[in-house]
Length: 235
Length: 235
DNA sequence: CATCGGTCTCAGAGTTTCCTGAGAATCAGC
DNA sequence: GCTGATTCTCAGGAAACTCTGAGACCGATG
Image 1 (tube, rainbow over the protein chains, first blue to last red):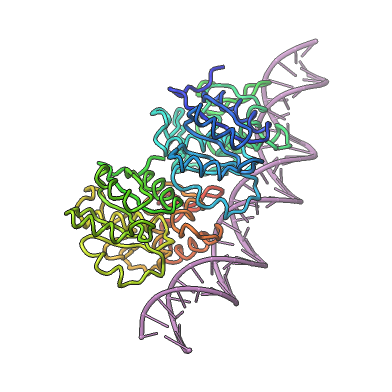
Image 2 (image 1 turned 90 degrees about the horizontal axis):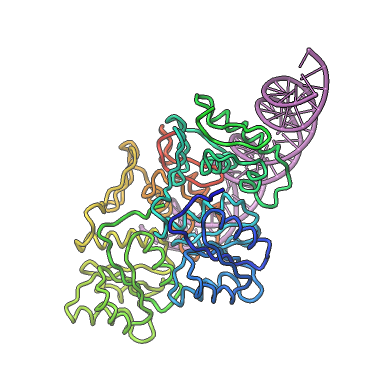
């Protein structure tokens, strides 16, 4: 199955001392069409920036040798302006984080969902001007439109109100329109990586979405029995 | 998210010996669409003016080698009239500044908020005649109008009294109308960069603003649950 | 047609997020 | 220094959201 192509492919450096996280992100981001390198510590990250020359860095804050903030500081003082998305534990003090959504930078709290990661990366790349031209803020399929910037979704011109989970799920379906996604794929991408529940949540949210966007014909959300779901116009 | 474009892009030289400040300003101003160069000392600044040819200089007053006033004096005696915004500590004597804020110049005390910086820069560029044509002094969305010049805000023709923070918040929302802004984005832009508080302040001020400008329909300030706030007319 | 696995929908409990009023602390102008 | 405006924090209550479990429904198969 081909990943959505970003041409030319953007390079992302993932830095975290939990191998679980670097694995998770590198696999997923490679699949999205990014070129990925990883580092497991702060100093290692600094040299990887030199050799790899990433377009964006996913940078864990809590690392043994030097922390993410310090890594970033050193980069900046070298005149390196590569945008950074910080990864932090949920309970990291707010005040440590404030100041990082300025410029092109951003942060995410663990645990996150892959769908959020991809959306944030696209947003940051777009802001920093290194995004490929085809990486628009508006996504469409048939008469379904989602705009990341204004966070508005419309079907047939009508505004549709979506909860956060509904939004992420629909965005994932839309970005993969016509491709059938299994429930576990959906769980892995849309829900946080530590979610313990099962596929029935997916079914429930698909049901919510149908009530909101598929009141009109043609129905866009299709069930492929025994396989999963997809967005497409045909029956 | 595309930066608001200023065409052609204006060049700003940021001079401060605190790296934190030059970083903060350069990242943020680049994001606003300015072209930015930095210098960490007075003499360095003088040569940067030559090589970079800025349209405006953000100039720290307290620097080790030669102070900001002296930098400015030397520029002027060379016949260089590039407008300057001085950056000073809060307790800098007013009378030291008088005499330097003539002729298109201005000053700001640290700590400042990014929203103020942008507003001041626009004001100075406008006065000095180098502002892009589309950089107006009056900002509108629906029947909401804010005039930087007269510092008046009206909703539906009615004058609205705003405190300084309310003004900055509303201006930031207005300049980004229809775009959803997260609470941390808002904190980082509207509040001073050393503010230690959390997002609940944003909620409180949103509440104040609603009482002042959203007594009439349609409500302009919308909550996007789990994401942030935005100004828009739609429901 | 009967059966069975898979899917859909709904209600409700538990959780999170948001709103707002009240009060303390700080600041600015007289 | 007094006074009123402004800023910020806190906490209770309201509203929205999430998830689960149970039962209805559907489609394929024999």
